[in-house]
Image (cartoon, rainbow, N blue to C red; front, side, top):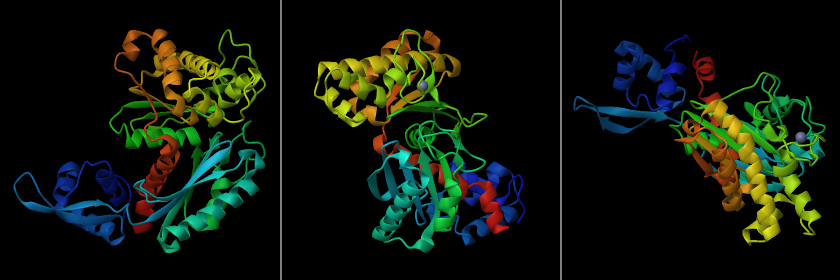
Amino acid sequence: MSSGPNSAGDLLQLFRTGSAATRNELQRVTGLARSTVTYKVDALLAAGYLVEDGSIVDGRGRPSTRLRVNDHVTTILVADLGATHGRLAVANPAGEVLLESVIESSIRKGPEAVLAMVTRRLDELLEQSGRSISSLRGTAIGVPGPVNLHTGGVARSISMPGWDGYPVQDHLADYFGVPAVMDNDANLMGLGEQRRIYPDAHQVLFVKVGTGIGSSVIIDGELLRGTDSAEGDIGHAKIIGVEQTCISCGARGCLAAIASGHAMVRDLRGLGHDLTTMRDVVQLARVGNSDAVGVVTAAGRALGDVLSTAVSLLNPDVVVIGGDIVHAHEHFMHGVRETLLGRSQPLATARLTIAPSALGDRAGIIGAAARLADVIFGSVAVDAKIS
Ligand SMILES: [Zn+2]
């Protein structure tokens, strides 16, 4: 079957976006002949991309068969790795999580050790879920560093020593025998928030505040990509007046030198508090400890300062703040709002929503499922499969 405009793969996209739900609607939207629509829909049904799902009454009062994308019965495996811990899940391409597990592992152990642990735990989860290996359609992984989309490996990353150039995507594809995708963690978390929580937003700016700081921009449902995969790496934007040294890159005055989990832990340890992780910081802020509230609020203000520039440039509908900091969101979000709104032009923020992540710890795996669904159900893959 041919590819190109109005290929079977293209028609599937109209079901994915909700532009069509029946053969009649497909005919109306595309202007194709009824016989062509029937032929292509039959091919999509036979290949398992579409399923019939009851009937609905169309505009002329006649019942017609509803068709929907068959994204519930197949299985995918997803991993969202942070600097110190990760979340793994068995899911379906619709982003419904069937079973999940949290792992504690430093990304600094390097690709062999981390991926051996990830694949072993994913194997165990798949078995526990009761889903068969034959139902597996793909895997997706998010990592806390820049990802080269052409090679499926980590581009130069100061936060992931030993990972540069390692073929992570190929490793997963070979191990599980299905397509694999890899992306930056903030990209996947932002995509998850946009697709699930803000599907109608024109532009979403997402920021992850964890051990480090990363961000992503989603425009009309698609991730904005940079020239060398460094998009969204705002943690090293410089702030005038910040004297602290960035633990990650060694420079002075980075946003991450004051607002990252690393920096908050360091600053609170300097004030005599015995803590080691971002989650310890959050816990201390939540019980109202004045040092922790001060450090977290200052971090929020610093992020708001950098974001005011981004908002002036992009004029997004929504700014979503995610990562471990979200659990301390009152204090942090207050700081963000104060400087972001105070330093932006009113027109750029008049309709701006600034919100903590609604998906929380699951944003990454839901975004990974969405990214993988775009590959599995994308025009190119579908046309290749049924041609
Ligand atoms: Zn830095």
